Length: 68
Image (cartoon, rainbow, N blue to C red; front, top):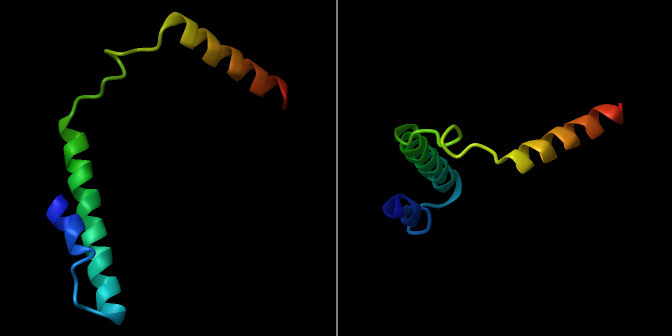
């Protein structure tokens, strides 16, 4: 990832070719991040909200619905 990010700044290209190269590198970085995220299990179920957090979320929801 560092190599990809470094290539954003080490290019000798200019103009439209530089922009195209930079867009390609950014897409590669997004793909690497997405692949890494897909390998990690979702932790929401394991680290669920505490009771007071659920209460706060429900209260906020009720207030938002009341403002309609």
